[in-house]
Image 1 (cartoon, helix red, strand yellow):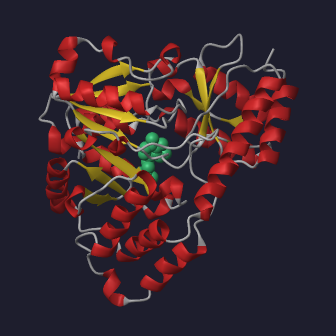
Image 2: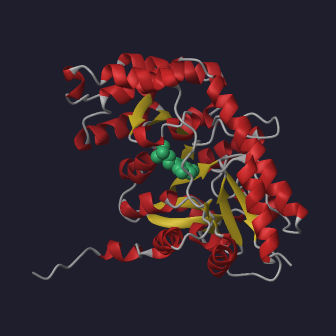
Image 3: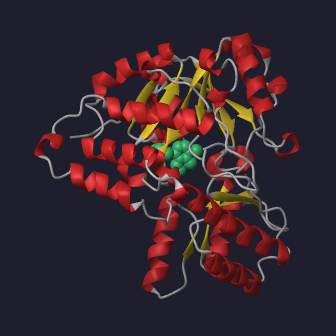
Length: 389
Ligand SMILES: Cc1ncc(COP(=O)(O)O)c(C=O)c1O
């Protein structure tokens, strides 16, 4: 039989990640060094009490049935967490669980957009921000995040007709890949702009707990008027090292959440109950690990950024997330070529900035998934390679 696939499949090539995975395999086979800073999966482990909650629940056969919905206990845990963490009051019907923010972001536009409706997404930005609405047949328009504007949205640069046409805007700070945070005043501006043009705000706060230099992570919902215009995605993946459990939440505007839940009830049957139990334990139990992890990421950030600076590689920085965003060293302009050369000469893997959009070209993203000592080794190996002139 000859299969004729949907046109949308043409958007997804094999891409650089497959190339990097193959190179990594080859290098391991040849016994060459590999320092993989390409993938953002935490190398930390979940807290014991979180694992125990999951293990206990997994021993009861009734917990293997369809969960159908979020347990009252889970919703209550989210309400208390948002109150404790951000002083944000949430109602029960302002919350839905997701199989990770990635899944939520891949579907949320289905509730808001008809085919061809405009969704604004960041350039550079985390890929699902674009892929989700694209799969939902929305029309993608980009807003630019530029260093000269502190990587914040310059609302005046969004053309009037684009703003008027937009149905939704995806915003995310602390931002992957650019590693910048946004002040409260930014969210005030965002909310005013959204109200003016009647645009739904979808705020991804996946790195709410990973902010450095004494700053505190902000919830978009803590800013006046936010609930009138949008929802926030908040994930347990990075905050509690539960990436594989696939659990996060969308919270905020009741009408948006109600519609999203209605859509979700057609597609899935709820989060596995032991995972719900683990999430409750994480959100309500001791929080010490959250700060310890944050501090360790910050120490790694310092080791990498200061180390690179000391060998003449200027501008690597991160205010938050578990990544560092670095302009290519002098003499390089093509991020994909640079990544391949860096691997060849040092064994250090990063992600070419071009993966995140045209404005990511000229940059490389490193994940902070190696210890401080390993970061020092990485810097030494980059120095030795002579790749930084
Ligand atoms: C900005 C951003 N949003 C969402 C996600 C996915 O989070 P989750 O594990 O909750 O799907 C990631 C993962 O790297 C991310 O970087």
